[in-house]
Length: 160
Image 1 (cartoon, rainbow, N blue to C red):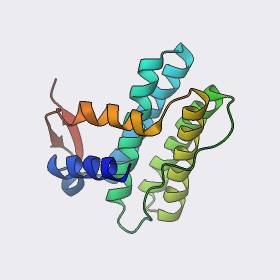
Image 2: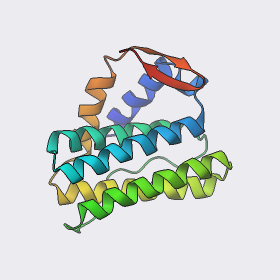
Image 3: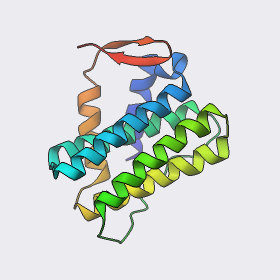
Image 4: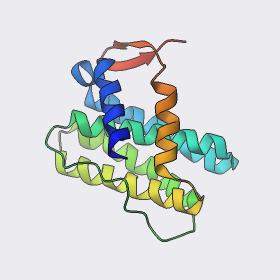
């Protein structure tokens, strides 16, 4: 898992996201991806769910890297609960909205705690849906590693 996280970090570095990125816009990207996660759960769309989980984790890895000094990301503390993926997905959206505010207000401890909460809910969804967070992240990385784009106003914009 750590090797995969390093690949995502290197991709973000190579694309200029870490150098030119804006932490608030990165938090907004997390919010966008968590709403896709919620839609996938509502639609009971497994492929979209795998994609959304991977994308959320990618945005959080980049957020952690942007926020120098945050402890290492922990993605393997899986919950034992097997219920309520819709509640967990909705909670991810709420936490992602809070992350935008926390980062905008430069409140590092709250932002760190909020991000940790998102990861915990993602883990709960993975357990409930019998998914591996590592496999979801690998799926997302396989897509983004081939993606081209450019930095625009502090945010990576992919080519169509």
